[in-house]
Image 1: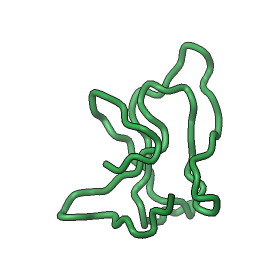
Image 2: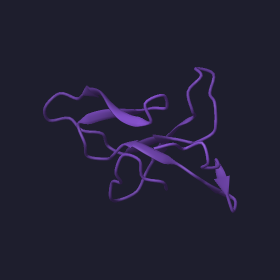
Image 3: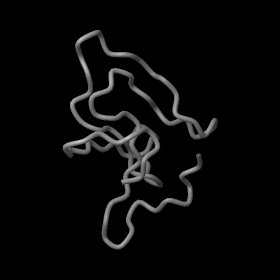
Image 4: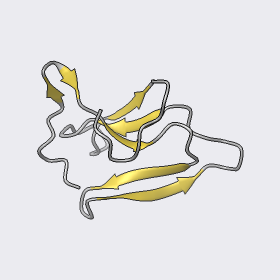
Length: 83
């Protein structure tokens, strides 16, 4: 997966790529060199991510990574999903 061609904005809407879905215990990060989502860590049993976490493609934050985003919606998405 290569997100280089996905703009940060399209038709005045923000594009977001989901890395870690709501309700999952596994934390994933996108690795642009491998062009894959890689498992970073697992939350302890009984804990889960309360919302979808992702990034805004083609942006760069102070840490050198794309800008992070928290998506609040009823149902979770999947890693790599474009919202």
